[in-house]
Image (cartoon, rainbow, N blue to C red):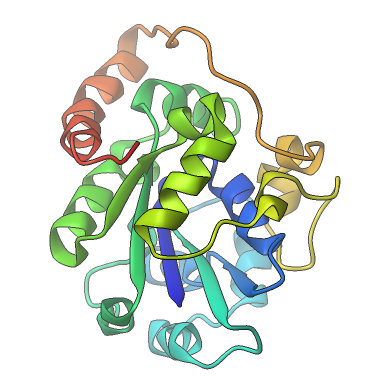
Length: 231
């Protein structure tokens, strides 16, 4: 199985990568198109130069990596929809099990804004994720549901993708992993302190001004995907 897990930032995506990486039958890849996205878009992200130096900048080369054989029976790829710029090859994903991990945009915006000032709709990926779902289809799962009951939702996901559930998915060692992208030191602080999924989330954050405007823009795309979610 080649599993492409699509999600925007600040969306439990690293914890899910660690969860599947805890299985002995999976190899994992962390955002392989990140450097190609930065090179193609010119976006000014934290650690931009280090990211560009750490990965291939050519999206065709990255696509070949995503389709290449791995040493384990299965491959888990953590992808962000907004990394797939217009013209980037996507044919490799047609042969994948595509899963779309979503999170309420209020939670995404609050978490993202704590790490990077003035997020935009482009940054948080909801428009691109909806478009990818329309193009590729697949399974939708909500990170809030996973945090509320990790074992039930991981069992549900495994059943949906016809994969035996492995209890190893519920825990991982504290600290960074060898598969982490170089950007982990900026973004992965909380998950590096964890040994499993965090508990349920509280009330939705409330915003005013530009962040409220951003929430209003993102919410319809989240809602459309949420209607398709499993669990």
